[in-house]
Amino acid sequence: MRQRLFSSARSRILASYIVLLLFSTVVGTVALRQVLQSRAGERVDEALVQETEEFRRLAQDGRDPRTSRPFGDDVEAIFEVFLSRNVPGEGEAFYTYVSGQPHRERFAPGLETIRVAEIDALASTTTSQGGEAEVADGRRIRYVAVPVGPGDRATGVFAVALDLSGELDEVNDALRLASAVSIGVLIIASLLAWVVAGRVLAPLLVLRDTARSISESDLTRRIPVRGDDELADLARSFNDMVDRLEEAFASQKSFISDAGHELRTPITIIRGHLDVMGTDPEERAETLELVGDELDRMGRLVNDLLLLAKANRPDFLQPETIDVADLTHELFAKASALAPRDWRLGGVGSGRIVADRQRLTQAIMNLSQNAASHTHEGDAIELGSSMVNGGAELWVKDTGPGIAPEAQERIFDRFVRLDGTGEGAGLGLAITAAIAEAHGGRVQVDSRQGAGARFTVSIPIEPPQEVPAR
Image (cartoon, rainbow, N blue to C red; front, side, top):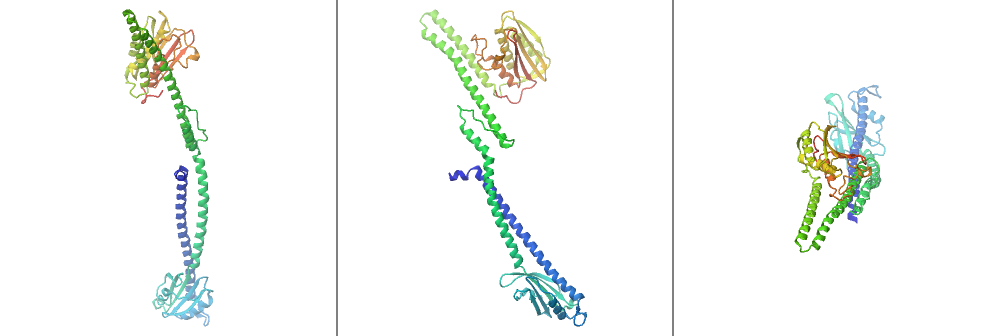
């Protein structure tokens, strides 16, 4: 159970979401730390620059309050005046040096006296320098040292140092707060992601359950479809697939039942006559003739069934370029020899198509034989062709009893016979429909009871690349 939980799609989605959030949180925290430290450093630098600028203005433009004259080279007086007038800010310290020796220091209130070796090393510097140093208790100090005096003969150095601990503490507090908020957001977002993932995957769970419940004996289950997203499209596709499966299984059952019934009759006849066949030569000859006839009928039935089975194969057609007029005359000549009827050539189309000549001939011969079987000697049967709507039409029209409207919907089904004579297997029109559909076309019937019937095979100029499934 535990292994199944952690291997489920919902868990994997949640794990991916958590990993993404953790990565984003870590990257965001690191970036925030860098930004906060950079801004803290900028504030410290601004404070150091401000103090050194104030000192420079005093040294350059200030006057000694004792004499009311400029300080000149009296660096000690400059230091005394500056230290007496300026109070170091929080965490700040002022250092002064005269002739390379420490002179006086002043520290912010509450800040203990500290010595910084890096600053003492700049006691005789003649250029402005700055840097960072770490004192004994682990605190970091940022400092700036500027020389005091004319040109290269500077006799004093003024240094400002600022403790970074306060700024860094603020940065760390902000990071801790941001981390706590991020962890809270991560937990809440993970819970929401778990719920959302469940809702998103709910149609897939329904799809899974429906697929499990479907069997050959029950293909009625369908998935309820809501919305227009990808999952809704998947559900529609699944329902369409099940519809096709249900139709295929129903057709298969009907086909097997009908085929079994059609084959059972000749087998029963053959077995019955063989069981009662005597020794009389004449009786044996009659029985063998009857058995042969039934075997021929079974052979024709099997061949028709094989033809229908091959209709879905890509090699069912052997297309070639056909002249419609030549094909029409050829079909008329063959059809007129089927039975003594008043055969008429109704029309001849002019054009070329790419089709299987033998299959089209077989389809039209089936229609012609069907017309002949529903008419009497001397009745008119019309055969013709035309080029319309970017394709060809071949038709056979008879003057027989016609077909009832309710029967026209099923005459192209397998093993359907409407005349009630029991002659034939009822596969001729089904074969014709299969041939037309293999060409990418169709067969239509136009009939009224008592007014004959017209069957029209419509096919495009070229067959499709794949044989359409029936």
